[in-house]
Length: 543
Ligand code: NOJ
Image (cartoon, rainbow, N blue to C red; front, top):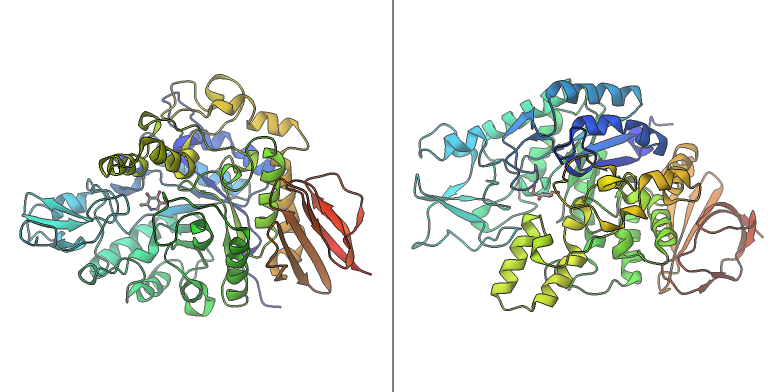
């Protein structure tokens, strides 16, 4: 038997530190706040924390604009507290996955401060500079946050590239000195005892701006192989790359172990299914379940034996899944459990985003004043100027804005949901009296305990980790069902994706392993009527 990688059995929990738990009353979540909640994560049973950035940052993009990769932002705490967090996690059997944001730095990073001074500054080539075209930017490249990707810099009368905010200048990865700096930073954190890296927009590091190539540039995989060799390759860490532009062929390139790049990637194909093809995420279209099943099944098949999937519904950039594709009103609990079942039943490493395990929902975003995020604010003003109706803009925003995921964690029904004793940096979702961790922990039927059970099953049942995946009834418009098979065992995972009852049949009996409704221990699957959002995991007993 090949020695399997430890992270194949792991479940990751993402912490967005700003909104997780504030220990000192300044309204901003911090490292000591995280330390105070390790018992909660231990209770849930997760193995890895993906920690969104806690480095020094002017916060143009909530920490994804870094001014010192080896320093902790004072609003989050100190390096000693960070070290204590790593140690305490280790005592709980939890590893920390750091967020590596090296496609760009902050414009307040010392490298950029130097680079912009003069054309012959030794740091100049750390970034990407071009002359303008008759008073305009060098080409049509656009920033992911709207507007041109080029910003004019007075000092040297040239433009620099920024695929995100203008305070996030892109690094020039073609420059070997840049790559060496990145390896140094990674090794610094590896030596501190972290367990891995989540790599921010890593598919952009091979960009070729003059050919307007943003993602998947020609040297991307060469850089990743160099990174693997120079840093984590022999260290038994876990690595995941954020790759919005990946299709299955590219997915294999990144995560085929023989290529020695990354362990897995976040691909987002399923997350684009409720937007008008070819348009932006703000151009809404209803999700078609058939497409969702097809995309998941495609990735499950494509990486079978050739890579590894990451499984996620949520992160700090996505709206809350129970509001997006579940029902955040009368069937909030049932639909949150159903969505969890679909995801955790598949092959790959599951990721849970803070609050998902208690069924936190999108928050009311009624006007531009309710928005904190640079992306949604930019979009609002841009579309206003283009003549869009206020109502349509706000509809897109309340459905898709990243602000939805960034409201403070709802710990209890007390002052500011127990997140802070001060004034929170961003408002608490008004439904915290109803939805909070304390309440979830007191109710054995809560979403929390359902997630806990799914995590536990993954530890106990190799079929969930190694079993083959086979989609059933791809054409069915209401049911998401599939089989996992391993070592003479067969499991059926069947979920009613909607709020209307629907029929389902499979020629077998099933011994129920987990469900979001009360079930008999053995059920006949030949002809069943699934209740709203009903989800069942059962072991098949052939008849
Ligand atoms: C992806 C991150 O997840 C997102 O929050 C950030 O705005 C961009 N990358 C830029 O770093």
